[in-house]
Length: 391
Image (tube, rainbow, N blue to C red; front, top):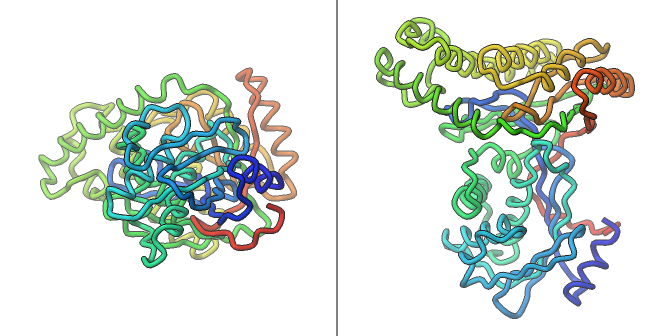
């Protein structure tokens, strides 16, 4: 961050600014449950997007980044014209949605610095949106108190409506609401949430990027969503009170599953129902600091995603299998949509180098890809940084 002050001055001729940040996230447990109204368990990470901001005298929002030469400026009363720009649409989309929601947004200079690894499924887009949102809200609406859930929903609307990506709420919710040394238990149907203590002690989070392009991702994702919708429609014949698969307990499912006449659809529904229950169990075991049992829940989640939901593939399965061969590993699983992306593992700090060497070598030998390893810690959600040392 040492060059941020210099770049801000070079771009905008100003030395004074305020600084805001919002983290990336990884989903610990609860995969492909979010769009089914179920439960997820994300954690926020010590990587994210930092934005340096000050006010302008005109009605322009001017954007740049520490790793970009370009300067993008958008007029506040013409923000809809910028939906298709190559860079800056996430930020201008947040400004647009804030104005639509009745908040003040004025002319400003914004310099972005991003430490979230791109393409790793750690939600760099949500970090950008939420950092933008808290900066604009705080600078231009000082008389209002921040409703964090509302800020997350606003950032999600920017991605859905302005950028055109049909994401769920988990990424933005986690980025805004994150809490260091805690996971967030989130009910995606109601947005009820609670913080679950995550006391890793001598263990840490290691995220491995397969570095495989997800060519199947979008089409298979849409296919899985439609299969779940089909399963829900069939279950409603026996369970007319349900509105989503997140409403279905294991007992309800087991008593009604015979109504699902397609074995593929039945497997998809079974994953969602049992995955939700794994998240519920995880809250209990983490509150008791039982990492060993939590690790077993992670393993069961990956096996279900592999065998029932069928979204893993040789790359993710290889990382999963090789991780569990290394001593000091409590649990491992794929995280994200699948067909590439990342795994997350809980690894003893003394075993990190062995883990990196053994898993990396075996993975490359089997797949031909070279993985990236990220040793991560948890962090707090969207916030202002008031200590400006080293900037």
